[in-house]
Image 1 (tube, helix red, strand yellow):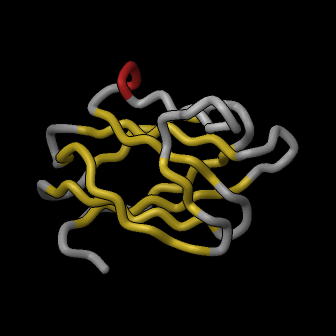
Image 2: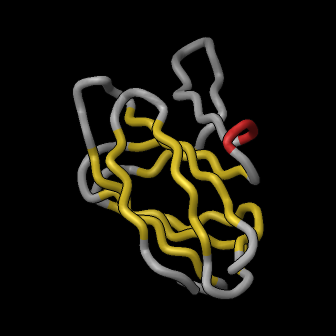
Length: 106
């Protein structure tokens, strides 16, 4: 487990680092308002999210506004971080996204 971090997410790519207190590979995402696409990586270079549009696929998993989702990604711990890249589906919308590291969370 680890501390919950909060990110301001907009239509541009927003990248943050998440660190857990003990080794874990799951992250719980909660977006209270806007739809957000997320991508988890071991560094900023391999975690760049892209929002898909018809005819153009993108790297990212959707988190529907008002809901939460648990994703498994790179392992983080006290001495290793993961990078999370996020973007909303619209340049006009800004959303808070809460991210909590853990293992076996539901």
